Image (cartoon, rainbow over all chains, first blue to last red; front, side, top):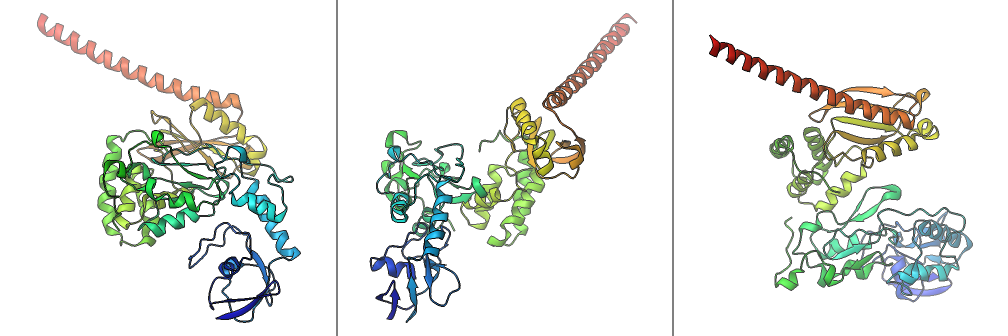
Amino acid sequence: MAKFLVDNREIEADEGTILLQACLDHGIYIPNLCFVKGMDHPSASCRMCFVEVEGERQPVPSCTVKVKDGIVVKTDTPQVRQLQRTAFQLLMSVHDVDCANCPSNKKCELQRIAKFLKAPLKPRALEIYLKEPRIDESHPFLDYYPNRCVLCGRCVYTCGQRNAQSFLAFSKRGFNTVISFYGAADLSTLDCPNCHACVDVCPVGALVLKEPAKRTVPASSDLGLTPKPLEV
Amino acid sequence: MEQGLLTPEDEESLRQIASKIESYEKDRKNLIPILQMMQETAGYLPKEAIKMAAGYLGVAECEVYGVATFYNQFRFHPPGKHHIKVCMGTACAVKGGGIILENFERKLNIHAGETTPDREFSLERVACVGCCALAPVAVFGETNRGHLDQETVHGHMTPSAVEGLLDGIAIEKQMKERVLKRMEMEKQIEERVGNVDESDG
């Protein structure tokens, strides 16, 4: 057990636990998007979970810090908030803010962060850049909305944990980066309608299950088949 | 990412790829070398090739696709007979390279990176081609079975020049076809005349 201070509160956690995880477990909220409980090597790609750790020259993403006895952590300093607001504004500059028509309205992680940081959902200083096409319907059971996606990679990680290989992957790059289902259209025996772990883990509403009527192929469970294991 | 049907040449390329792939060690680190070999052989990365690479290395197809789309060197559409590169380097971009590219896209009815269904034209957006004084620049390449034969640089491009160049190629093609047709007809006539002569004699 390691004892350490977070915002002047003493917390106990196993040595080596990820700091972000320990804070969340103790009810201390740190904005985060790309972290999934149980990750060994968080990608630290969302740049939201910054904290200040005494002894470090600058704020660090708390998902890359391991808990050690006696560390002193501050989650609410002006510098941390500045970094989080900037990261949030950049994320929102490529986001199609249309909450009223989004299935994750009111349970959206972005709305929560906006409220927490007291930041507007629409960035004022930045130009909005949206991707085309607005919906990727190539997957037999899922629809993907690139302009809602924050590219956190939770779905890619989760799918990879559930299956031998992830059926989702990042493709293209830069502003054009999207999650792609390439090849999934041929895997008609996929068990996506019953698993939908990627949909559940999405912090926004970027991945949505297709309505059964719109499925391009019947689900394996509809046909009484077992999902196809991937050859590795 | 739609692709046209495979031509007999493509199928031949895929057969070659299938035999060449055996020489690579089955290790993730060989993914990019394998993709490069595939593109070298087929001129582009057909869907079937991506599937083959994924199957060979035991990685998911979407992961192979993700890697391939990350790098600019890989194309997913076959190169057309006329490969058009439109420069979008700094000088060309400032001088309206974007308008030139848009004109090609509209005229050919394809996006940058794609190929017309008849495989006559393919369009590519490139960074600097090294002659900024001529901005905006387009480079026309003639390809032969996926490999570049010769390139012509067209400088100071304008929207009307786009139309002119494409019309020029269309006219040239028609003329070639006409010449071929005439030669064929002449040959037929000659044969017929010859037959008549023989029957007379």
